[in-house]
Image (cartoon, rainbow, N blue to C red; front, side, top):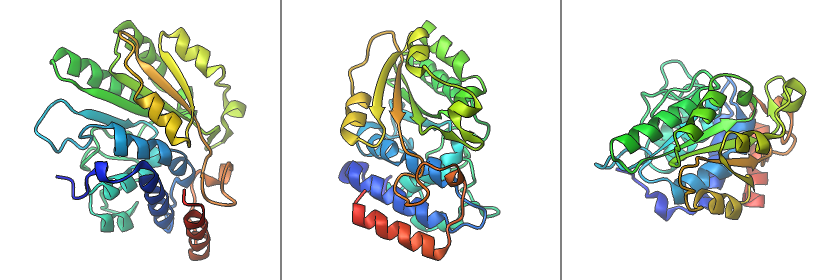
Length: 276
């Protein structure tokens, strides 16, 4: 069971805690995907504090929600939220990316709270669709939430799943796109143009809900919006890469970095001062 109920943690507190833990993990000499981890901190915080039902599968019921981190390189943020909610020991975060650690650069199924390994990008949405359809056919009240990076929309089987989800009327499936505008090679739209994303998802038959990915009220309203029968939902979340770390925000070099002690200290001080 959880050692700390998510219901007792506010989304604002959880977002701050996720950011603090990601910055601390950035001491790893192997580097941390700090930019993409911090850009989804608010999305994860609202999901785990207010939306997801038994996401780590710790209860007896099959009627639970599943969270699939398709952009697996942001695993540090997921590990932070699993530690904050008591699914894994907080001390284990210090082993991030070390040899034999359970906390790899991408999440692995062997870790509690991780239903699927997502080492290859571009394939998270079909996993979520499978969960959604299987739950429906087995008579379980399952919902699947998939966090996608905008860069990974350039590859893999995500668009095939988008087409299939609408065809099968998977209204218990929600995709959340972290639209921070960057990938490892540079700005997403310089590498491979993605826009108009709203029209593309709508063209596949999805309900599209654009939000500011750092505004908890907007995120909350989108994720709690009543289901539109027969239509999957996609939340297009505009975010800032490395949100909360001065000098790294909205930069290519934040994709993966090791922060030295001084940089971490300054980032944590800024974080505490801003309170977000």
